[in-house]
Length: 465
Image 1 (tube, one colour):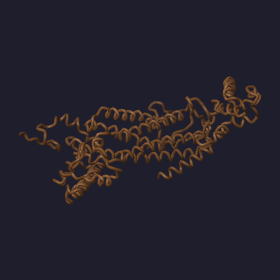
Image 2: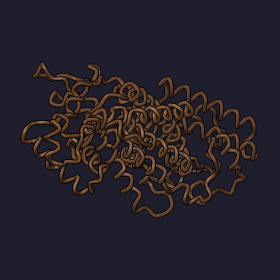
Image 3: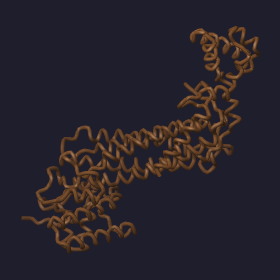
């Protein structure tokens, strides 16, 4: 019989070495090494449980735990020799552990498989990532609430179809962004709840014949419960899909914010000024100040949407249980984590620091007949049927377009020419301030309503810290 020698730990059944190209093609250690901390944490919990179950001696358990702690320090100090020949983070750590402590290292993998090991590692990793993302979301939300409070009384034109619609408080607009982020945070928190189930103990697919105590490892790793089905636990990545879907929705929201800031910062609109430190210049045009951070975040939305499609496609045809296809889940997942984290960091710093140009916004709100709906509502309150009021105001607006005159600038005889029900009191509602103040109901843009929503948001944020 030909004896085969290899650094790989699974070669007993094989009689020839893995092709060098295949070895490199199938290796994942160059990207999954970022799971080292979660892998070591899971292995320490597993070793403690094996000792309690009588599979390891106390001395073997202690040697394994001390060896893993030393390896973690080596990795963190960039003093660890990663080997593609050992395929992945799990095999690299196990081999180095055995090299360091001897035979006890070979016993660590008793009662588990790389299948439940990696499923556990990824859940631990994403759980940490969600906690980091939610902390950034809270910081961003706080910045938006601060900005909303500073600009409660600032009026800008609200748009539909990118046409001037009605005047709104800038603070109200910022709280719309805030509400989007609250829902994003809730999605991540819900995802974390479903994710926080422990696969460890499922082994390859059917569980293990060793007397393991899954409740013990579950408690040590701070999972809510062990998985109920070993097949499901090792083979599905729906928690990763859900995380990436939540990330995609979040970046869709930040992309919309970015789009508005890019438009607002244009000299043609001139609603805001972004700090220089978040902009760049042109290599040829010295006057340029480009909102590159906002544009990059807008662009990264496409990147994360692509990762979601990649993961959905990866899973769509896999039979139970584990398949090596799932090695491909990590790179899009890791990049999604990095992209979301960095995008939130940038926006949480940049958005609250933007300078609002109140006068420009106010002038823009006066240009598009933003109080036309208020005039129609005024006529309805005077007894005019809404459809008739709509036609009357439409005629008044047409006259204003022809004369280049806002409704508030028309004298009373002119307005009464469209409807004799119009009296002097109409001018109270034709001003931008009057229009905004009139929306005085829960969820409306009236400044006192906005201040109440800000107080509620602050109370929520204080409770979340």
